[in-house]
Amino acid sequence: MSGTYHLTGKKSTDVEDFWNINYFIDTRTIRVFTLSFQNMLLDETSCGIGQVVLGRSMDITDIRCSVLNIVPFSEVSISIITFILE
Image 1 (cartoon, rainbow, N blue to C red):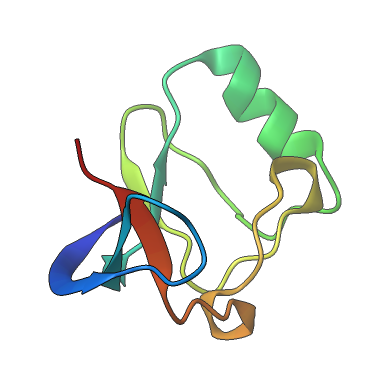
Image 2 (image 1 turned 180 degrees about the horizontal axis):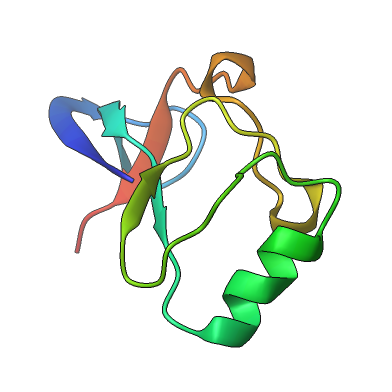
């Protein structure tokens, strides 16, 4: 995943010494580096990744693959995540 974040400057009211951060995720990609992993993805019927090319990044924003715990981004709801600053 890649994206940006913004530190809100507000301490979490739920977790001591945590700060609220707003995340914006731009992309979700996967890159396969081994032939065995490539073959596993091709054989796995629960993955909708399709043709996988070694070393090439693939967009997985709208992909479902239960064996890798990937769901389409439209089904993921992330509102506020807290983060510890030391």
